[in-house]
Amino acid sequence: MSAEKKKAEVQMIKVLAAAAVAAVIAILPPPEGLTPEIMKFLGVFAAMIVCLLTNAAPNWLITTTCCMVMILLKLTKISVIMANFSSNNIWMPLSIVGFAGCLAKSGLLSRIAFNVFKIFPSSFTGTVLAAGTASLVLNPLVPSTSAKLGVLCPFTAALAEEARIQPHGKAMKGLWFVVFNIAYVCAYCVLTGSNGNFLILGFAPAEEAAKFTWIYWLMMSLVWLVVMCALSILFVLVFMKPEQPVSISKEIINTKLQELGPMSSDEKYCITVLLIAIVLWVTESFHGVGSVLVAWGALAAMIVRGLFTSKDVAGLPWQFFMFLAGLLGMADYMGSCGLSDWITQVLTPVVSSLIPNSFVFVIILVAAVWLIRLFVDSLSTMAIIPTVFGPVAAILGINPLLVVWLSFVNGQQWVLPHNTPSMLQSSIMMNSVITHEDVRNLTFVYMVIGLLASLVSIPVWSGMGLM
Image (cartoon, rainbow, N blue to C red; front, side):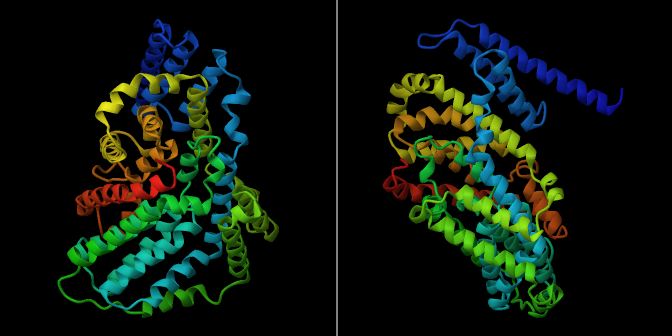
């Protein structure tokens, strides 16, 4: 038997097991307060979780198929459960990803990063600060974390080699830690920093979704962002500095800028559109033009210039959009059918006695995310966390969007190689001067800083009415 055929049979067994779970739950007598229709939904939802946990099929196929099963069971209509395809949850990231691709294609992102590095001193401290600043500057400009890492990782590795920083040494590990933490993990702190933010945005209550503008999102995450950036850099400067002083030549930076040549007309066009878009995002509460319209306008400007063509449409992450629409459709149904209210009612007495305040809730939530992420990817975790912690958060008056956001920013650990594939990608981008084994222990530093940043942010979130 070929390996592919054997794999297909294993996948089929996983799917059949999920279907069996769905059938058993669907035929169970409904508890008081639930209906047979809700039990059918619970069966489909449980099958979705089983398939996601076991990787029975691609994520987008699992969530979309579950939505179709809901329609087959006459629990909903396609116009309802797939309504997110016509919402900001899809059109915002679609526009942003397309626009960001044009910025990268023009060479503007590389130019910005190289010029940031040029400003700082040539010492190890200066390089760490430059790497952190460049990562921070690129965050709001690019929703693709791979694109950010693709610019920063190779260049940081080249600088380190020029300064004779030893591969796999603690200074090299420290440089990687700063770039990865700020360019990748902190991308969730700016609305336009990661595609994942638009998945998170989908969990905002319908009546509150409009208030999560670019500025409001930054206000929500600012304390967490500052703590994560400051402590990551401080840790590296104190504990990861090289034994001997190093000096990093500016020549390599000047060479890179010379290779780019003078700023092209496309770059000037892109930076003009980018600045206009940022101003409009930041001032949305004054002019009332929604973020998605601004993003689409920016993409339209790229189309007019010829920087975004029909070929680029095929390169958009359509599988992510399908996963996003399907998952949010299932989550929306859970709220509309009354299941969330029933779970909240059942859990209220227990929660009141076991989770006395928001601080305890955050500690338990983050610890649960750490545990779950050992076994499943971050997107699958998003299907589990709202189901388990959403009703508890409702009892404590915590916004469900904040629950999902906390699970994202605290769930990017790399304890095991498969936990965060972007960690492995960044290693390759740095020409393997660091490996997973080299930086495995640094994940615990990130986890502690993330939890601390979450706890320190609680007063701000309380003041914003998010908890």
